[in-house]
Length: 229
Image (cartoon, rainbow, N blue to C red; front, top):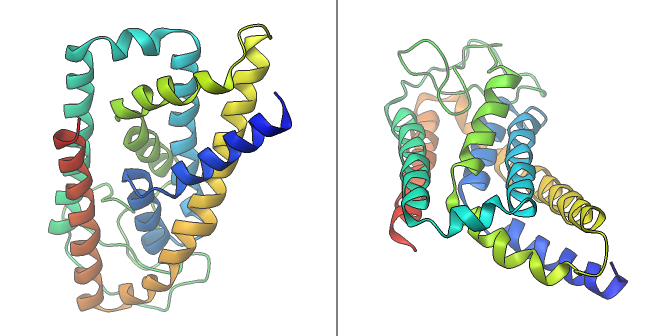
């Protein structure tokens, strides 16, 4: 891959990563409820989904999926349903005020629902954290259940691939570039931007406000996923 082609790829990847979506909402929610450092686990899950999507496109399955309206519709509805589930859980979550100031590593207590298990960000008693695996799993599902990502990569990747050169190294460069850029934008951008809002989690009113805002954000992204074709 030539330098000019790589710079074009890098620029396009940065613009794409900066575009708000379900991944950004999930990252900001994790940063507020679990702390900036631990929000990385959710970002890791989102990158796993991104790599899977690139592999799907690379082996040609993406073209088959994109050519099947029925498959795309099913994936789109599953993705929207999952985002609605996350949003509703946040809207219905019962606020809890932590018993002690949060540690820098866990700089905000997360909302809790009446159920065992975690709302987006997890159940949040003082010192209680959502497991890394739970955050990774949610991050993967949030990004993976988005059929538009596969269709997008089908349109995005080909211009950067030369048919006369080995395919694997080119796809590897694209995947690594996308992952590195997205991690930087998500962790040092969206997660860092949301971190100060974690202070609101120390009051019942603040928790309700954040639950409402991010719950509505998940619902909005779900609506966009269904309405925008």
